Image (tube, rainbow, N blue to C red; front, side, top):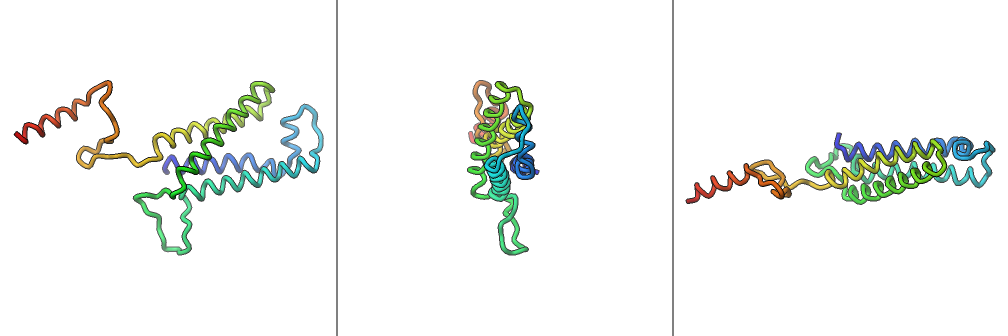
Length: 178
């Protein structure tokens, strides 16, 4: 499985894991984050369940917009293997990475001031997904410029070290041409 698809499924799973307690029992969240245990008010229940449903929707959107689920009406349609990612894959990746980075920062800031383990777990999960998202955004989101002759990536440079293989190949080509 491609790292990009693993990241999108990880994002959807992490959002679903956070959404389920919000939807099922908002009192559990209040007990984790407050010093006194009390019943959730009607407004707290509404916001908790609304946030949980929104997190599930965002998780499903990340998976659908990544292109891992083909959105065609016919059963025999297949995805293009040369370019399996959907046109919205990189923007979806960027937005989900930004979300995970912001949530990791927020949870870590709250964990460092309050010491609540729920914030620490949130910072750990979101930070891990933010790191994977950044890696995918930097290294796995573009098609490499692979040379047909050598199989090497053309975007690499020789700074600060020279590529001796490339230099010797160029010298051989020059000798053949003379």
